[in-house]
Structure formats: C-alpha cells, structure tokens
View 1 (cartoon, helix red, strand yellow):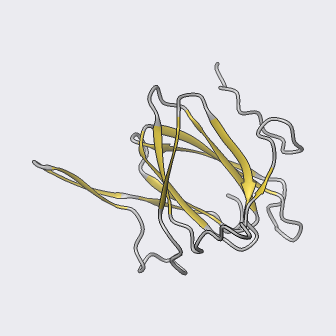
View 2 (cartoon, rainbow, N blue to C red):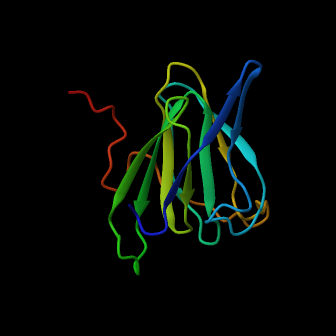
Length: 151
C-alpha cells in the first residue's frame, strides 16, 4: 500500500425500507478536516486521470456502478515512491479510499452504466488558484495502462 493511503470498509445497514451507508465520520481514525463534498460521474469505459493535489487529501467512494481507482506515488521523499495501487470500488465493494496529497490518482468506469463517485476533500476548491495538477491519462511517465486486463 502506498504510504498514507487508507481504505475503510463501509458499513451498510439494510432494513425492509432500503439501505443506509455510512461513508465518512469525524471520528474515523484518518479524519483530519472537512472541506466540501462533491459528486462526479463517468460513463462506461471513460477514464478520468491523472491529477494530484499539493495541499489536499481526497476521500473517495463510489455509490453507483463500479470504478477502478488507481493511485501512483511520485513523491520524492516517499518510502513507496514508484508504487501503484489499484482499487475496485462500488456496488460490489463498498469502501472509502483516502488519497493523500501528492499522490497521482484517477479512475475508470468499469460498469455497464454511469458510475457515481463521492469525494470528500479536506479543503474547499479554490476557483482562482486550483490545487490541481494534471497529466494526460495515456501519454505520461506513469507506468500504468488503463486497458482492461483479460486472461
């Protein structure tokens, strides 16, 4: 596991009316600060990658569909520099992934329908000076191929 990355199995509470799923609590061991909550989506087969934040930690889960969330550690001072983590998150695996600042990350919708991602960063988005540093999803120095792995 990349240094600083955490995964929390989410608690789903079902009853005859439906389900309640706790996603992120201020008493979670890795909770530090609240910035905002937002929803982003991807259509089947779409990859949204790569980016990182210098000052922001993300907390990401998928509430509809399935996503392959991939992390790459390019931090110079990290004991896990060069490591890649791949998580399959969504209706078949309810987890919250903590993505520390400085970690490149992205996701690909691997379900047959649009997937919905909830992100809870510890900072509020700054429209004037965004803490967002991007690379092309396919043309970069990150040793990762977003293609499906059959076999």
